Image (cartoon, rainbow, N blue to C red; front, top):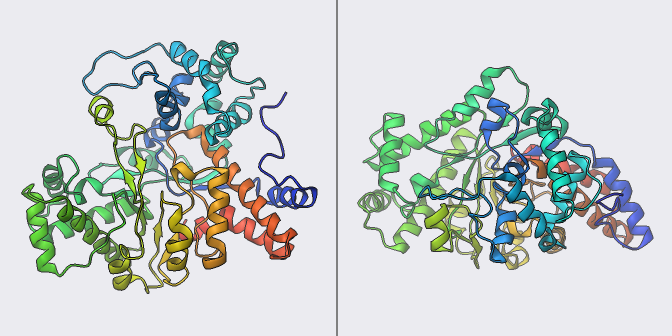
Length: 468
């Protein structure tokens, strides 16, 4: 028995399905480029066996525990550690059984496709996960995880990953990346500069974080010019450790290009903890433009991930911390919000700004026309809630006619769940091949062109955009 249909996601009509299948076969085995993600570099540095199935599939994956929490299952019961140290479920078998008992909740979701792909393709399982098969699954996966072939580096190579990027704070010492570099292993694990903690006045401990930035760099970060110099120094350090990009997760897409004296005054207000919400947003927006100017000098790609109301549940963030599945999409304005940034640097052909969105309505109305005009701007792939077959299909349908394929950047998986990486890339390749097949079948794209585009979307565009 197979968990997965070999023709999944392909069109139902025979002609288009045949074209999609041929396109997919041409890209199925291409190397994986994962230029933006959140896997733990410590995995690859220490190369220790993953502890157990619950630690691999349940506890680190917010897609999984978010769905279970929506049905009233407590995060403590799923083993997520509490900030106050109060006890949570620690028996991985109990956690796994709870997950299996409720696996039906994922029917029809991309999570089910990713998980079933991992179960079948990585661990060789051939029966569906359920309450009755939970113990069989646990025993089988747990046994596999004890073997050397299932350690992080071995899986990295088995997944045919050419390069993977992690994401670290501007204050991170990058010790795990240094350990990887000194190990002699050939796997390419890159870091990404994520300065939110030191550019967002509303980030907890902002002033203290800026002080630490000064201590790390030897710059006077109490002054605005010293603060900018500190960013330049940290960016250079991250680049020396392999970084090709920066990443910015702001509440809005707002950008500003303030005169230096205004920016300095706003920075002083932020350090004093006296910013209004609008002033904090203005400072974040100005720093995006400053970061773009720095990218013109050091070549790092600028990624903007706006439009998420972070940590929507106060009780969850207070009990379990940030990034626990309660970030919710919000409507985002790009036309007016990006204008200061694009007026400053948007015509620079040697700059790459990749914009993501959680507001699908913006793709055809705002983002595709912007990317179809400004040389510096590229569209990131469907992200987070839209990292799905339907989300990918809608993305292609709403953007291609306006900005084409070549103002997009291929696919990145943006995941913490290591075993889902090949599953996510497989889904993206199938989805894009299905879309290309419909273009060929309806006379909008020549078949030889479709094969070229399929390769570009699966591999070349990401390699080019992220300088890999």
